[in-house]
Amino acid sequence: MRRIGACWFAFMAVLSAGCIAEDLTLIVFQNQQAEEGCVIPSGVEAAFLSTGLLDLSGERGYVVSPVLQNGASVDEISPNQNVVLVSGADVELRVASTARSIEVVTMLAAMQQHLRTHYFSASIVGGGSAGVAFPAIDVDQVRVLRDLLGDESVPLVARIEVFGVIDGSRDVRTPPFDYPITVCEGCLVEDLGACNAIDLEVVIKQGGACNIFQDQPVSCCDNGDMRVCPAPPPAMM
Image 1 (cartoon, rainbow, N blue to C red):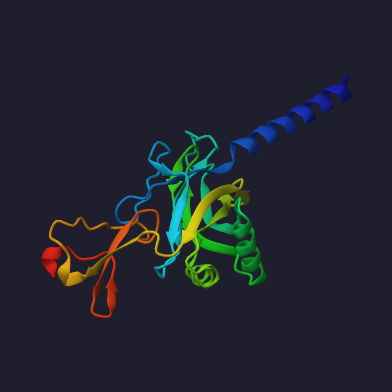
Image 2 (spheres, rainbow, N blue to C red; image 1 turned 90 degrees about the vertical axis):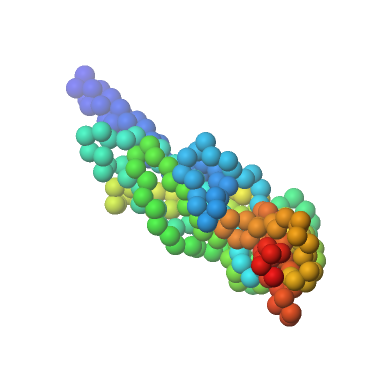
């Protein structure tokens, strides 16, 4: 009986450890819609984007802005327990559902341009959440994609895994979060012509909050040999 009791106690201890490990899971909840100034909301009730669009016209990558959740419970007695310190994210560009997407990702992999690790920091208390921002497609990848695609529009998938430590010692990593991004050239740019000839009634589109060449249209104009994006208000020219 004693041996059975000891085994039962050990079995229950393993089950309890398993439950605790599950509570400590760090997850990517959704990709937040960034606010003005590339401010990333930390609440899971905020507006979010289910897909992305990147115009390769600009020398900027696609900035993904996920909200992360710490699934560990908050400790009222020791509030510094179960704190996750996020240190970065691994991003892999993967194929979407088209033959051209398969070709492009295959070429990226051959050039070792499909994998990236980006480092940043965030602190998330037990039961809390935090909004972060980092490149899903970086500047070097933009240049390669521009050369590969020309004027084509191709869907890709950014597989994201955020990593860090909990309580300063145990490694944690989110389950993979797949975020579709369509890349193109010129698809978001509205060309207004000469900057000094913009009609006074034209509404200048400002583009995305973290990168003016992603997700939202941006109005551009020509000031001599220089393109200006977003275009200045007509009254300023």
